[in-house]
Length: 317
Image 1 (tube, one colour):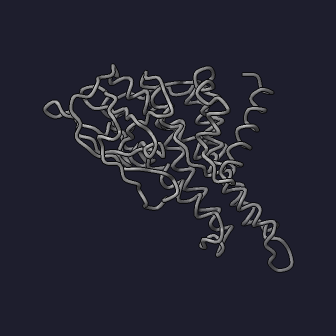
Image 2 (tube, helix red, strand yellow):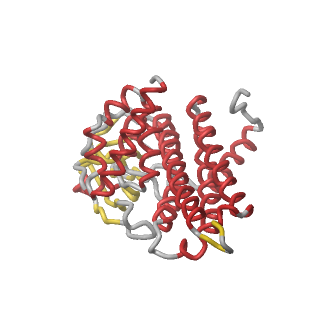
């Protein structure tokens, strides 16, 4: 995709998602009208980077993560197909095959409330099952407007889908990259909130944005976000699960850096529900835990390196 085309698409998607959120409309419907599935098929990297960054910027709720995971599993995505996500903090499949049954206990995106079918990956393969055969309940928790659901059930006689272990590994990598871009967009939105507050808030007769300590915090936040975006770019270029894992770990560390510095800049107003900061913070906390948080991923990579007694060349400098 040419730079000019990409810039136009970024602006179009960002404006459409923002308008949908402001109007209380369905973000999935808006993205569908823009040709999200066609973009994902034709230009998967650009589509994921642009759409998930826009979701982060607007703190929007959507089910497009299901489509990214379905494609990575080799299954055709559709608006009525949800994908069973791992349990919070984990990345192993959230279903077990026992005595011919699939025992399900995982998560779903907002699509868990509207989909008719559920793609379930277990240790013996994958299957598409009727979502009505499962118990689906909304997850209130820290991010009640995020549209998250818990999915549980025992399913028998499901139609098998040829999804191998390597496909699930690819799905985890794809999900981690997508969530990394959403966290980056979330961080940029929070940085803009803190920057605006610093320009508007006056102390000792001048905006606090003129104070060196405040400027340092904003600068360190920007560096962390741009570092994350560079790491995500390297993960796309390399295409291996380990670089996607490290990019997701970097996203988690970046989310914490953004939260720390911007909370300090926002000061007291940042602790209230009158300011939108808390909504972005809550969403970042959930996204950071999906497909493994930073600490768990780094420990897992470390164990892998010790086991293999080798360190791969991740990025050619």
